[in-house]
Image (cartoon, rainbow, N blue to C red; front, top):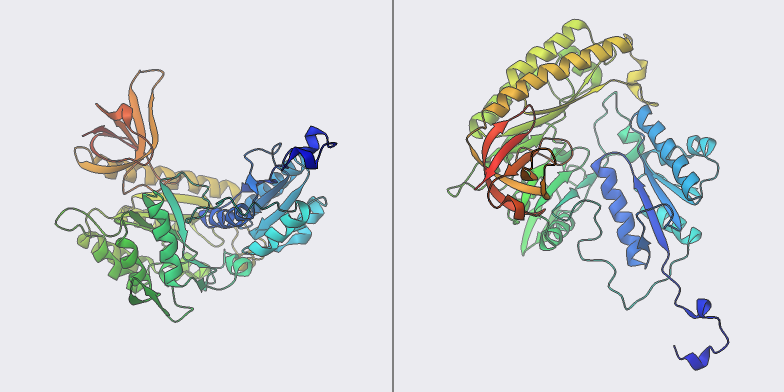
Amino acid sequence: MSDILTPTLPAKRAAKKANPKVGIVSLGCPKALVDSERILTTLRSEGYEISDSYAGADVVIVNTCGFLNSARQESLDAIGEALAENGKVIVTGCMGGNPNEIRAAHPGVLAVTGPQQYESVVAAVHEAVPPKHDPFLDLVPPQGLKLTPRHYAYLKISEGCNNRCTFCIIPSLRGDLVSRPLRDVMIEAENLVKAGVKELLVISQDTSAYGVDIKYAESKWRGRAVKAKFLELAKELGDLDAWIRLHYVYPYPHVDEVLELMAPDARGKTKILPYLDIPFQHASPNVLKAMRRPAHGEKTLERIKSWRKAVPDLTLRSTFIVGFPGETEDDFNYLLDWLDEVELDRVGCFKYEPVQGAKANELDGAVDEDEKQDRWERFMEHQRLISERRMAKKVGKTIEVLIDEAAAEDEETGTVFAVGRSAADAPEIDGNVFVEGAGAATLQAGDLVKVTVAAAEDYDLRGVLL
């Protein structure tokens, strides 16, 4: 702009107005994190900048979790903190499906929207802080904006769930299964890999049910018609130059077909990481029936044995609930015995807590809180010993490691090491590999290296860079 056109304007007003800034607090699971990424990608394309502090934001979005009562309270606390620190707050996410509860606790929020209502969130931001778009700026990269480190990303393939587990309210929050077209998934995946992502973590509420709702509709991908099926998607993802990790897989019969993609070829490479995250939740037939889970402990045990026979290096992760209504001491001991039989590699455990709207609230046989705690502690110690045994078997082996944190020096020992993960470790929830040795000091996040395992702990490994 010419100075002649604005000779009387003060310098402060003549300066170009800064783009509005949006802050975000993302709570809950990786699926919610992907929702946050989609919201930020849309806002960034409209000229908004992203703030990493309350003070620097013109408005704050809180993406809530409403799965457990403790999560709901965490969400309410986060909303309160955002209001106190910033004052302009928009609420979305799973808890947003109950706006009355949020407004009763925090009447000062600007807007409340439910899960997956991206357009409503963006519209609320527009109203609070109108966009100032510069059409000459390329604001959003092809892969969109990500809240994860540059070298790994979550790839959401569907929303909602067709299962009706009695402890879960996801279907009431997010609806029935809605699968993305395979082409859309693959375009996003390919763009992420082109942008430097080394690991794609496939997520949904029920990954192995992918495509059921759209009757496995075909998409054109790389000149071919490919069906939206779990196996077909896994094959196509396996052709990308990246680690592919499958999460939230229900043990339906057709899951067996994916195991062939986890077997190493002549070069020792696999299409898909030999890793399955399967939320078993329990093993006792009585408890599984009360949960309405689509699985049975004995049958699952036999299938796992066959999986490990086909893929000896297979890593199995799962989550369990103890203290579910009606769970007896016999049921709990059955679960511990089952763990001994199956020897899962990575396990998380939660104490059951009532969830508003869940069918499990109607069940008899509530377990005392002290008993829940006792069973949780016994479970975790039981699994720790299993993990210790399985980790010890890896000593002496050479494994591939994806570096998460650049090398740093241990202040106490002076040892220089980098932090990474093996194919057996998902970020945030599994173990780490601490890499030492000549050359370790130069390692950066995203490097893929070979490491010889020198020592094993309960959940982590220590190794030497080759």
